Amino acid sequence: MNIVIFGGNFDPIHLGHLNMARKAAKDYDAVTYLVPSPIGVWKTESASKKDKLNMLKLAIEGFDELKIDEFELNSGKSNNNYSIDTVIYFKNKFPNDKIYFLIGEDQAMNFHYWVKAKEISQLVQIIYYPRSGYHVSEENIQTYNMRAMEGQTFDMSSTDIRDLSKLNLPPQVLNYIIDNELYFVKKIKDMYTSKRYQHVLSVARLVCEIAEANNLIAENQYGNYFVSGYLHDIAKNMDKAQMYQLMKDNCPEYLDMPEFAYHQFIGAVVAQKEFGIKEEKILDAIRFHATGRKNMNELEKIVYAADKLDPTRGYDSSELIQEMKKDYQKGFIKVLKANREYLISKGKMTDNRLTQECFDCYLND
Image (tube, rainbow, N blue to C red):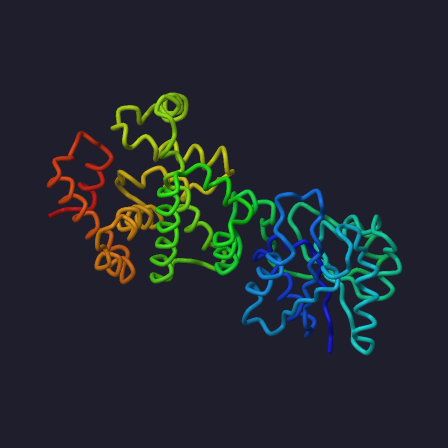
């Protein structure tokens, strides 16, 4: 049997980690052992040992080629685990097997700084996975007998996930983070009232359910759908004077819109500046979730509908939710019609050019 050692903080594990681990297992006909390191005392935003391990277990469910080894977690050391110790442990555990040591290209580039680097390279075969923006010197490749792997590079990091700027992680891990209030969750909750937080969380999950039912979510896109719903009302509780100033500074072209719509425009500003959201589709879904507009993309349509149909609003929206899950394009039209009827019945049809343009674009009856 071949063994791959893959160590890291995994705080949290993301899709880039999983891709590396599975590719190594496939290329070397091996079992890849993920070896999480203990939490450094300086990383106050980190998950606990228990949470980190639980997220790893969720992430590798269904992948028989992946396993977890808790050697470093159980070493009793907080931040002084050296790879040489882990390598010796695996050599003793699997004395008759070929052992590979998987690292990223950024780590391979600086491998000569590692403790007992030469000894590690003599005990195991070092393999490194490509990472955009890094290049390993020929000297390191020769000195430490490194082998390069071939594979798709991913712009992902655990730091981005902890900050909420990119949620490139398995859905089950994301749900664990939300349910256990890890990383960014406290900051988000502090920006909402309790009732509003329950609404946005419900909308985020409904957005994902609708997108999944329509087979719209690619492997690394679940987080984009979730965060669009999670942040759609992020400016809802902002002071009106502050909101007006932000509108003047960032969205002057929408100052003619009714005040109820200001939070959607400012929400996109907050998502971008406060949380580092760069994906335009996400920003547009936040920016037009309350009013809609003409020529909406699929994410905008789903967030718009999920916001209107959120079950926590207290009315039975189950029929329209099912229509959205069956066919979001047709379901969106039905949601628009229902919303137009509601606005007319309440006498709330105002001079709102974006909503009128949305109705004109999609409702031809």
